[in-house]
Length: 233
View 1 (spheres, rainbow, N blue to C red):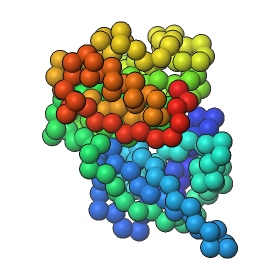
View 2 (cartoon, rainbow, N blue to C red):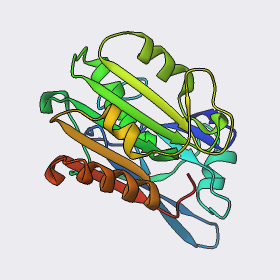
View 3 (cartoon, rainbow, N blue to C red):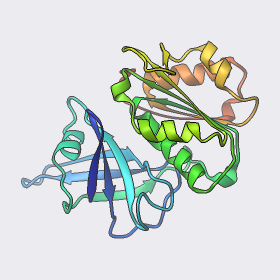
């Protein structure tokens, strides 16, 4: 296992499962920890790496945000060390997934750590040299909460059909970023006529995003959502 810091509260773990049948962009794994007294805790984490692995064949990356009351996330972010063993089950999920062959265009809406599974889609697209048009909107509380900031900036500058909007809800936005929450005006600007939308993040964010898309006339069958926990965005 390898680990590197993404933000002040999040880290990416590169795992090498003992056996791995491969995954699709957007899937997740379950990670289980077992204490010396036998107590077990299990949580689900999205896979951040593209289907052919994060670094070398047979590896996967998961980006984990430390939650204030998270007994598993705090251990994984702060205490796990290379060489430590984890119980990993997966890949899991067949709805919130995308392959280059599925085509586009895509609208990716991410709130906070909800960026992880859609980042796997973006990396998959880039790695495959796809020209599928993609627009991504990422909502974060502050600039310091943005995962993969340097990589996103580089991908958006490539001019190959990937567009990025970062909107900051509680802090001062950096140059080129937007202040405020996701709203109808921003979605009208970003959404395509046709294609598919993926929304992932806290319950409140996803409810808002999908509601605005439907209100704007998007076919609900083309909206895929994945949500978690209380809203903090």
